[in-house]
Length: 611
Image (cartoon, rainbow, N blue to C red; front, side, top):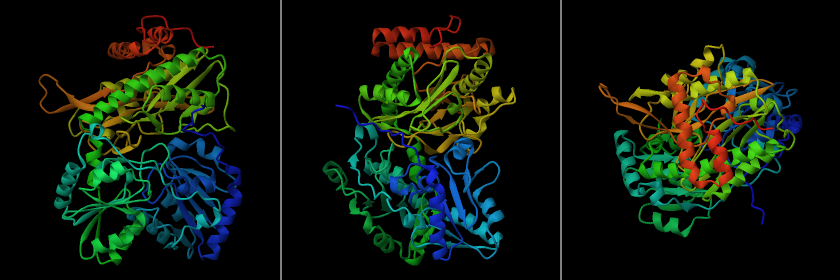
């Protein structure tokens, strides 16, 4: 029987953008609005959202995980970051909506420059945080306009076939994988609430809800979330308000001594009841302004700040780390089998590569989903940082090209994310130079040691130095946090120019510098790393460093050994030896022989390029 796949390759349908935007403008005019803000968000401000919240993709055709459209009566813009420089213009109808780079202007600046005096700009109060609305309001007022909340999202009025609310199964996350009982997590959270002098916490982030109550769901593609909210009082029983009625009996039994379970429809009334006369903590990152307004209307005092769960969740315990290691071992076997298969493929398309890699992962066991839609880019498509292959864009991988594949998996015991760039046929000298510079940046992060308290922003430049020396750079962060069988993009930690959170032992991040030559190829090399203590003789303060978790070879055919220093060559040889020794026992003889060649020391001649 054919296994159902976790990914589809349907065209996003950007050709319908003109008609859909025209229909939206008609609805806006009937409601007395001159414009509307359409973020890529749901009511929890999540990166991955249920189908019915994909308003931005439906309206514009843009399928990226971050972006905001502003639709005015005569003009419209889609504001995206550097990851989508090439993707956004390729997906949207640029005759009706103009892609704008965040490096050039932000949403608020565009509104300030284009909203006319007296015009009314609408927004959905469930899709914006209080801070976000404050910025929009300042921009609208600066232009002489008015910002107005809407009771119902006008995009929904024209999206006639909008999917309904998800109702996936909600199940317990086993204690041997979670590593800490729910009761102990609640106790730690109450200590944090008491310090903040708050009577209760509104848990609006489904990731945090999943972690705090040791549950997992299936309401969102590629991330095991159960959508909903929770009210956690300093005293008394917490209450979970889940969107899905499909709650496993085992979870009900596990939560019965600790918390109440109620339908999501009961949440508003419960919030009114707990808020009156009390100070209620709202998560600044995920709580919609609609929650703030409701608490105020109920006579409560909303306090917007960090949800303490976010920081606790970022530091993995021993069980979560052990699960992550097991997931990476399983994933490494699948990826090596895929790379060996790739090297022997006579003909290859981008979609065929995605399907093959997913199949290899499924054969290893415990696969629950992919952790994001696989980025499978050959030649010029590899230069699109978050390229998503469709039946329309699928192309054959040709000799003389680079092939970039960025993929990950959700296993029952951990989340993975890996990118490899491989040569198909003989690479050019320039390709090898650029690849090696990216590799140098990757190694610099992998080998980095730093004092406790160091932020991701302070080490981000390590990944870029070799590129900067050649007048090059890349327009995305170097690393993002990763969850434990949760989101592949997890904060608050990150390695980026904007990474202001100190890195702590137990945090997992990606290490993924890149280089993109528009219209020709892209290069990205990604492993996941674990922050841990380092014992340095004579050190005068606590020192941390990274342990690489991901296990898969880099393409030696693309490495210029002369561009690497002795320590860098030693690192790559030691890493390849570890990959070979760790994965070899789990591979069949032909794949093991391929891996032996792929991980030979740099002094050895590389294997022949794939045809």
